[in-house]
Every structure is written in structure tokens, then in C-alpha cells.
Amino acid sequence: DQAVVVAIDGPSGSGKSTVSKAVAKRLDWQLLDTGSVYRALTWYSLQRGVDLDDKDAVIATVPGFLEAWSLSLSPDERWVRVGDTDVTDRIRETEISAVVSKVAGIPEVRDAVNQRFREILVGTDADGIVAEGRDITTVVAPDAPVRILLTADEDVRIARRLAEKSGEDAARVAATVTERDKKDSRVTNFTAAADGVVVLDSTDLGLEATIQAALDLISARS
Ligand code: C5P
Image 1 (cartoon, helix red, strand yellow):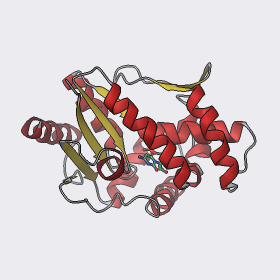
Image 2 (image 1 turned 45 degrees about the horizontal axis):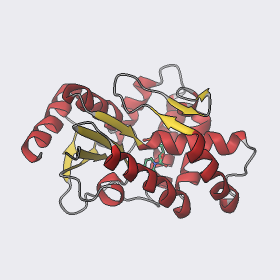
Image 3 (image 1 turned 180 degrees about the vertical axis):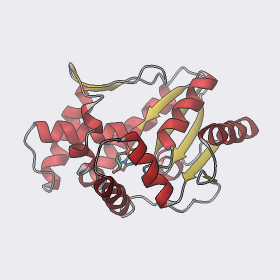
């Protein structure tokens, strides 16, 4: 049988990664973190000395990247590799977060990467897979039986990011979140729900309540 696909989109700090991971874990399903792929590709391009403003140069790195890239679909075991290099931690650094939108904003890059995402969703032998990102509900898996847009007010999202990055300058973290959302929203619309997508607003919900709400939506629709 085909795996049940759960598509979850949302802006940074919405709780998307934490909730997706928890849901996959509790259902014993797989997890596809699509943002990590744009991050790893950004790392790979920088590593090769590519100017990220040079779209053609970035596009030219995609085939080599897709050949070398691998990631864990297990919610318990998170890793991303490029060739033999484990990039799990370094792709989360501010250096990458600040420029990843440039790479993700190139349509040819998105087409190639999305193709790979669809292959993963179709090819998995798990009972279900949670795919999270910015355009999973709309572009990657618009036919998924469960499509959720996870949102939260901006001040709450910034506060959550700050809690994750304790020790970093508050104003800088806030600016990074706002800036990245602004850049990303030029490429994908993850602030308004497309037809048939359920909005789950976590502004006033604790983490456990948000996870439970997502699990309820999944059991109602799959
Ligand atoms: O989710 P995360 O913050 O790791 O995503 C990193 C970046 O990857 C986003 O800021 C966005 O530029 C890009 N992205 C995307 N489409 C997705 C997932 C992520 O453009 N489906």
C-alpha cells in the first residue's frame, strides 16, 4: 500500500519541525524535512565557491548535489550527509539560514529538488510519511490526504526561536526570522492556506496540544 502522506507547511518558528517530528515518532512513520535539503544545497554551493547570486552557477551544482546528498527519514535519527560529510549541525548555523532563501528562490532549483521529494514520498515503504516545508501542501504533495498549515503570531515565533538560540543577540534573532520570512514569502505562500488546507494556529497552544491537534487531524483524514 502507498504511504499516507501528511503535508505540513509553515514559517520559521511555527513549531513545524518539532511538531512534524513528534507526530512521525508517535505514529512510527517517516519524516521528510525538506528545508534541510535547501540548507544542504546552500552549504554545498558555498563549499564549491559558488556565488549564490549567480543563478546559473547555483543551478549547475544541483545534479552533483542530488547525487551526493542523503538524509535520514527516521524521526529518531536525524542526519543529513553530502558525500561522506555529515552536515546535520552546520546547515543550521546562521551563516546558512541567512542565505538559504537565495538558493530556494531559484525556480529551476525548486523543480529539481521537488522532483526528488516526490520520488521519496512515492517510493517509501513506511505506512506513512510526514513531509514538512513551505510548499508541501501546495506544490510537492497537493493531493496528500492530510494538509496542514501551522502558524503562530510573529512575536510568538520569534520568542520560540530565541529560546532555541539562547545566548544569541535577541534583536539579531528577531531580524533573521522576519527577514527570512519576507524573502521566503516571495517564493512560496506559506502564510495563507490553499483550498482544503487546514490552518492550525499554535499561538495559544502548548506544544503537546499542538501535537495532539495534528494527530487528531490525521486520524480523522487518513
Ligand atoms: O524549514 P527550514 O527553516 O529549515 O527551511 C530552510 C529554508 O529552505 C527556508 O527558509 C526556505 O528558504 C527553504 N525552503 C523552501 N521550501 C521548502 C522548505 C524550505 O523554500 N519546502
